[in-house]
Image (cartoon, rainbow, N blue to C red):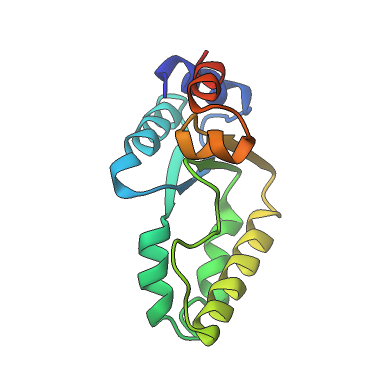
Length: 152
């Protein structure tokens, strides 16, 4: 994604110096350069980035092992100090690439419900859809057209 656009997004979000900004990234490890660019831009604005990475492959492995006590109230209380959430997605969030056992899927759904409950209390919450082929298909546009439109 164009660095100039990231600068405009961060500026338009109203992020102020001294704020805590959660960069909630939905993508795989090979796409994390986008997350890094957002983090650098947030720091340049005088704010503190806090990164939370969600990937289909990692969440599938993580929640296959999780228990009901893995993500308790203490985990979600971390987000009480956040001023702004930039929810950045390279692909459709929440959806896993593979199925989990019924019990594990319930733990994952409970985690997501609690996570978005906590993030919903944050002062500012912005969703940013990165121009990718998968997001293009999700929107019903041809990938080239979607990426060109979103990158200008």
